[in-house]
Each structure stands twice: as C-alpha cells, then as structure tokens.
Image (cartoon, rainbow, N blue to C red):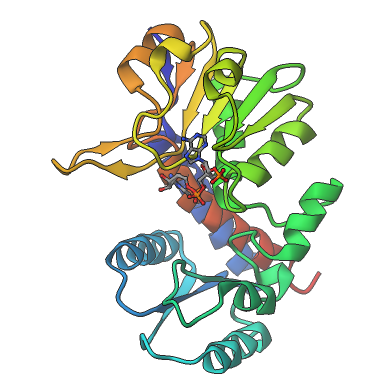
Length: 282
Ligand code: NAP
C-alpha cells in the first residue's frame, strides 16, 4: 500500500512557519505582508476559495483585502483598481480570482498586475522567467507539488515524470518545474496515448479535471502519484482525477483528495505574498 503524502499537515506547518516569519518581518523591518484579492460577481466556488484565502492570510498576520466587485463592472474599471493596488505600498501580493464574468477578458487583467505583486505566479513575465530558468514568482499549485515531493523524499532528478493536463495554471508550469529539477518530462493532453504514458511514469501528476480518468491499473509499481483534480460527484463526494484505491495499491506515495494538493495551493499563495513583502524595498 502506498504511503499517503499529507498535504493538509504540511500546509499547516508551512503556515505556522510563515506566521513566525511575519512576526519577525514586522518587528525587524516594520513590514506587514498585504494580500489583495479581486473577486467579480457571485460565482459560488470563487466565494468559497476567496474566503479560504482571506482566512489563511489573516491567521498568519497578513493584511488582507477582498475587493468584491459588481458582476457588471467594466474592464477599464477593473484595470483602474489594479493600477491603484499596484501603486499601494501596503499591497505586496494581488490576485484576480478566476473565472470572471464573460464580458471581462482575464489576460489583460493578469498582465496589468505588476509582475512582482503577482501572487498567483500567472503573469506572462513570471511564466517566461520560469521557462528561462530565472527566478520567478511561481504558480501556487505546482510550487506546492514540488514541496510535497520534497516532503515525501522523492527527488525528480533522473526520474521519468508525466504530467497530465497542459493548463497555464497547473500543467505547463508543473512540467517546467520538474524539468528544472532534472526529471525527464512528458506533458499529456486529450490527444495523448494516456495509458501508455502513465504506465512509464515514476512521478505522475494529474490535473485534467476528469473524475478518476487515470486508472489504478495503469500506475507503475513504486510510482509517486500526485492528484490535482477536485471533482464533485452527484452525491456530493469529492474525487480526484485518479482512481485512488486501486492506484494506492501500486504506488509508493500518493496524495489524497481532499487533503493533498489543495491545502498546499493556499499555503504557496501565502508563501508568494510573504516572499514579495520580504523583497519589498530591497
Ligand atoms: P483545465 O484548464 O481544464 O485543463 C485541463 C487539462 O487536462 C487540459 O490540458 C486538457 O487537455 C487535459 N485533459 C482533459 N481531459 C483529458 C483526457 N481525457 N485525457 C488527457 N488529458 C485531458 O484544468 P486545470 O485548471 O489545470 O485544472 C485541472 C483540475 O485540477 C481540475 O479538477 C481543477 O479543479 C483542479 N485544480 C485543483 C487545484 C488545487 O489546488 N487542488 C488547483 C488548480 C486546479 P487539452 O489541453 O487537450 O484540452
């Protein structure tokens, strides 16, 4: 049976460490990290995510602001707010919660956030720096996954890593981080021969958004399985993108859903904001 990689426990430890660092930053340099979150309209999932982020930020001693904007707000009005937050020295990290209402175009909004205040690590400058192997604000979910691998004692160097899903938020930055850590990386999508690729993976990261897409029987014995998927079944149960029980019989390490990747994403958002505050004025 695979050993569980407990993301909930690791995330709690990281948040506790950050709390201590925040207290020291305040004492020694008079800086209080500040996170501003822009939420537009009434998407119910976004409301839950933003509440979670705000709570985590406040618990570790950040200043935290939620700008809840009207569903009908115009693109120039959102850009205007982002410009004001860029100029606000109290704000070290900022994010625009996605998805946005249809009439708003997310790309120019993300682009408008100053790259050094981009708490989500999604700004094209940060994505480009990651690709070039330069220091960047890293996307939260893959950054959290790298920490999970470290926690499990799994070094990517020399391993065959397979990433399922090529989104800008998870799959692509994940592939680049694993590559930077010297894995041999394959990035899969809908046209890939999924089973054949998964069967070769020493490290498997699945972020497709399809419940139990990856069958347990495909998992290479001794592999490390990281399940990013969060899918709500009709009975309300949360399942990942991997058939958990069958995969756990073959893998050496596996993340649970929930309690694996999810808590790490929020912890890394806090880490990115702390890092930005610690860099401020240097
Ligand atoms: P996304 O933007 O919808 O991208 C999904 C990717 O999966 C696409 O590249 C797609 O391929 C690929 N895919 C879909 N069906 C596939 C199939 N049958 N075979 C192979 N590839 C397939 O998704 P995302 O934003 O990365 O999110 C993915 C999942 O992770 C969702 O369940 C989301 O809720 C979850 N998530 C969790 C966290 C967390 O913190 N736990 C954070 C972010 C996302 P194509 O490019 O060919 O369409």
